[in-house]
Length: 119
Image (cartoon, rainbow, N blue to C red; front, side):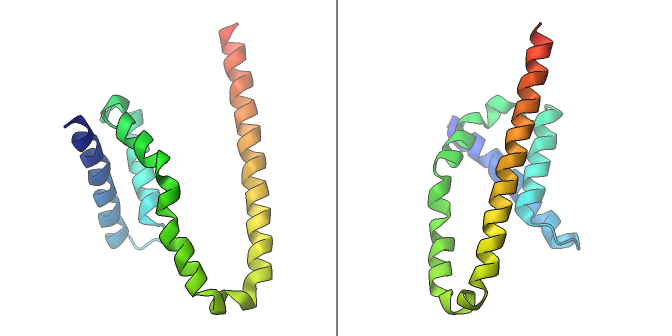
């Protein structure tokens, strides 16, 4: 029953995000609204982390399965993608490297800051 409650909370936030996406005329995906809402609710302690932790861990664990339909669609849309494959690959490689570099620097910064606070 605990997992149903946790998953229900996550679904409720997702539903609110979809509603916001429907009514707000900004080019922001509903998933981004959902992440922002969940972050705000967790930071303000309206939703406690313990209320969603196990279900969130499970959803993260099965996340690769969620990309299978998108990958299958890419295969079926190959005729449309092939003319622009080189720019797409360039952008993918560049953005992946950029995300890795920024993530590494942010992680280094946080580790250094926490080690200073521990002293």
